Length: 175
Image (tube, rainbow, N blue to C red; front, side):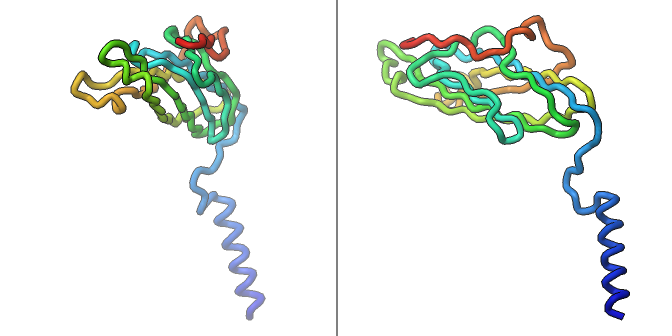
């Protein structure tokens, strides 16, 4: 009697596993596709970009910059391009800015701003997802300065002509 119950439970467990029951996000089968992430720093002159870090599915893919430097990312460029299996993937950006002030606003130079934002893409088998991330300044003069730096993501089906440039932007010291 016990053996029959065990066999029934084992058969039921195998049947559930075969149909994917209990799996949150069963991976899709198929050839890998490509994800490309372009970045542009469109924040105002009050913010100086020091570091960019991109994580893909929780693992750091690109890290650029250094403390005290300034990354020149005012023009869009392809920060990362890589292949991944079909399904959902998380792209997470971490940006570090230093305030830049002068005159009565010189106190801003002592401020550091860390901006974290993420975006999930659904990559089809053998497909391409082009993601454009833009750092921008939200709000107006009444918005607290620490709430102004934001990132927006936009998916497009094509990669622009900057697709050949995959690199960290140039660093200028002491900007």
